[in-house]
Amino acid sequence: MFRNQYDTDVTTWSPAGRLFQVEYAMEAVKQGSAAIGLRSKTHIVLGCVNKANSELSSHQKKIFKVDDHIGVAIAGLTADGRVLSRYMRNECINYSFTYESPLPVGRLVVQLADKAQVCTQRSWKRPYGVGLLVAGLDESGAHLYYNCPSGNYFEYQAFAIGSRSQAAKTYLERRFENFADSSRDDLVKDALMAIRETLQGETLKSSICTVAVVGVGEPFHILDLETVQQMIDAFEIVGEQEGPAAEPDAAAAADQGGSTEEGVAPMDI
Image 1 (cartoon, rainbow, N blue to C red):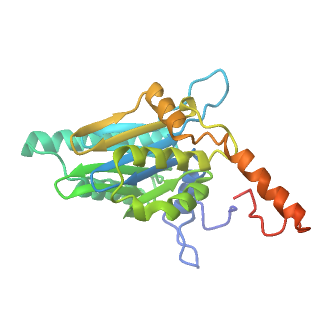
Image 2 (cartoon, rainbow, N blue to C red):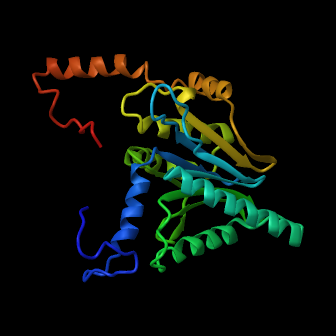
Image 3 (cartoon, rainbow, N blue to C red):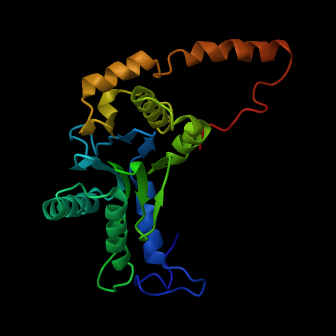
């Protein structure tokens, strides 16, 4: 993307029918660290990659609890994510006080999308530079939504946003048909596997990822580091066993006189 005469104001249309300021906000989501969500019939799991600005600083919080039955994971501008999560928390409190029942997830997502849409139609405002994965459980079942800075929202079985999220999407697309009947632990395993896909060779450790769960009989909560590390070790997803398994295949190809580089998928996605 580059500057042009149609991107100085969020309310200015280009001749091609585009709002460049909104597209720039959507680009900010792609620059944030990856966030992942997937759901079954009874549980929803959120995961994110923790990135620190330097070795001397702590990482920004990327997963927020909204209510006992709702949580969000964000990618993009963290400050905007905090403001929107606080708005969602207030909406849940007001609804619960008025109606003495939990706020339906779909209604909250629509309110959030309406709030984001207003910023695309006011010249004195800017779009929120953050994407939100909203996980929730209500009377109609488990839900996973993605809220876009443009004001659009979509419901997914599984989804990933942020930098290098395409690798996670590829993994989720291969596995999503099994998610509906998956157990809680299997969902967490798949979330960790998808997170590992976004690391591009970096070793997956509990210190660089956060996982949260909400489900039937289980309020929204973030798993502690020890639990996540035990799951990583138990599922053997660190990748230590993949190296030895690949060597015999390369040796077999060499014996056949073929080139090991032909037909190999590119590593940089």
